Amino acid sequence: GVNVDDLTKTILNVKNTILFKRDAEEQKAKSMMKNEDSANIPLIDSIPIGLYRIDPTGTFLDCNQTLISLLEAPHRDVLLEENYFSLFSDEDETANWLEIIRRNGIIRGLVFEMEQYNGNSIWVRDNAKSVLDSNGNILYYDGTLEDVTFQKKLEDKLSFLATHDILTGLPNRNFFHAQSKLTLSQARYSGDIVSFLILD
Image 1 (tube, one colour):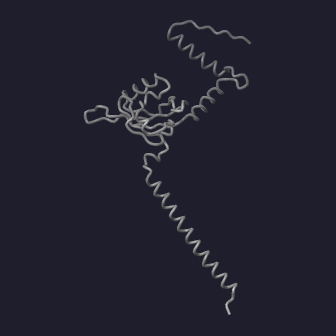
Image 2 (cartoon, one colour):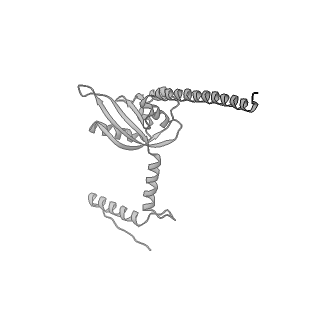
Image 3 (cartoon, helix red, strand yellow):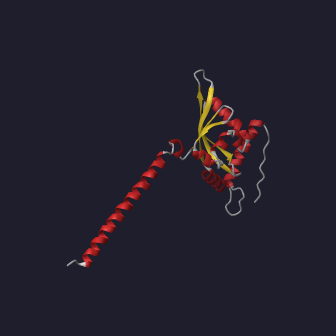
């Protein structure tokens, strides 16, 4: 007197319930492992801006994972053996950086070109601050680095388009006015004579 169809449906329902519970438990376990992994990432490494600490000579004392990725360094230990200023593309920028921070104790939004470990150059925005001991001596500099290569290229392109003809690439009237004002101003300061030759 047992209905085979009903029994089959009951068995399938029990089987599906067991599989559903097992899948739910596996998903929960995976989710917990994922949360544990993300909980183990230090806050300093989850920030999307490069953070660094260097001594007064420029030797790295500490950095976050974002800076390592930004500079394409092969490993954290490699970067920590590096001198910060040796990564500057232009040596004059090192002198400029040091002059600003010694004068003001802080750098805000300084943009310059930097070399990556893969040989490429990027434009970065640097913010840094002197950290002093109780006697006013510099212990180290703490700073942030942000990749602004895209913005810099866009600014350069817009600046070029504002002062050059799009079709020929030659300087336009805006460029002429800006340059003539600068030339006249320099001539007044130095006492030089300036003449303009205009050809149609």
